[in-house]
Amino acid sequence: MTDRSEIHLLKLESKSANAIDESVLEAIGSGMQRALAENKSAVVLTGYDKFFSAGLNLKSLPSDRAGMASFIDRFEEVMIELLRFPLPIVAAVNGHAIAGGCVLACATDYRLGATGKYKLGVSEVSLGLVFPATAFEVMRSTLAPEVVTDVLLGGKLLGPEEAQSAGILHRVVAADALLEEAFAKAAFLADAPNNAFHHTKLSLRAPLFERVEQTRQQCRKGFLDSWFSEEVAKKRRAMLD
Image (cartoon, rainbow, N blue to C red; front, side, top):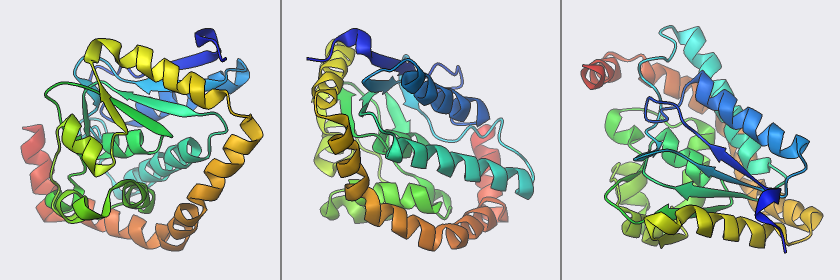
């Protein structure tokens, strides 16, 4: 049985509600590399306080198209790294996981959510944004068919129990037991022979990777066009205000 000391805890603690920017992407990427360098058997990914991740960090993202294009490329690279990561990754969703934060959680292998009053979901369409290819395919492969219209097209945000029914979470547990349960699930997954686990994970996600490659450039352009449109720029300014 895998010991807890063999599991790497990757705790995001950006004080901007773990909103995703270059520093958060760097923390995720370096955390995965550290787990491999230290010969860990699995990873538990979690946030702090009331936030798993509140989505993209509007305050610190690039203001020009070239810079934003580079950022979105890096965001997609990190999501693909998570999806392809050779070790089991369990998300311990401790609080709000919105937009890119929900995508981040759904790019892991298993998702536990704490009980509580917080929201999960993707708000891109309601904000007027085209999904980057990786974000869209992650959510398409995650959501139960009966909730796609409300969650993916309608931007409906869900409480943890609703998120479990929707497929975003696999299980909801007491908040004070979240990390303990996450470590237990990570240890269980790590007990499977790693080569077989990793090969099966990649095989399950092969259609996702194929669709991303087919649509990435088109979706990237669509995202950037929508991000810098006057309609979305106005909404972003209102959110910052």
